[in-house]
Length: 164
Image (cartoon, rainbow, N blue to C red; front, side):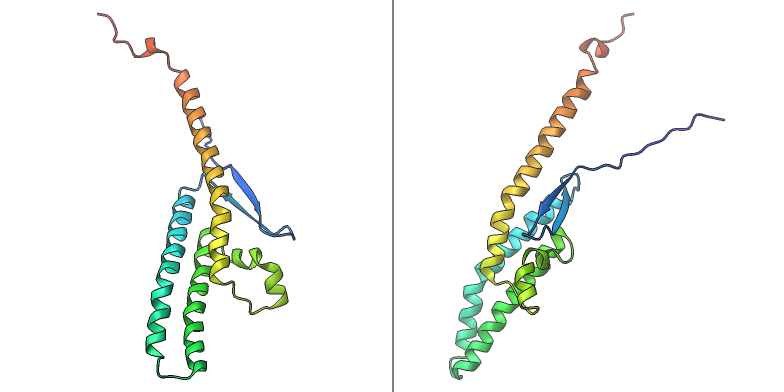
C-alpha cells in the first residue's frame, strides 16, 4: 500500500467588520477571489445609479408636467425608492444577505419599513472603501512575503546546467 497524504488548505484569513454599535458584524476574506471584484462592481453600480438619477428625475418631471403635485411627488418617490432598493441588493450581494439591515439596525428597529436613502448608500461605500483597501493591501504584502520565502528555498546554483 502506498503512502497517504493529507491536503488541508482551509483557513483563509478573515477580517471581522463591526457594522453597528450593537456588535453586528460580517467576516470577509481577501482570500476570496471574488470579493474585491464584487465590491468594485457594486461601487461602480451605485455611482452609475446616482449619476443616472438626475436624468430619471427630469424624465419624471416631464412626464408629470400636467399632473397635480401629489402625482409628481409619487412618481419622484418611486424613482428614489427604486434606487434605494437596488442599493440594498448591491450591498447584500457583496457582503451577504441582511448586511444592509445590520448596518442600519437602529433605523430598522425604529421603523421596520425603513429604506436607506441615496446619500446613505454613497456614505456606506465611501466609509467601506478604505477598509477594503487596507484588507487587500495586507493581502498583497502577505503574498509578496510568501513569494520571497518560497523563492529563498531555491538557490541560484539549483538552476545551473549540469556539466558533462
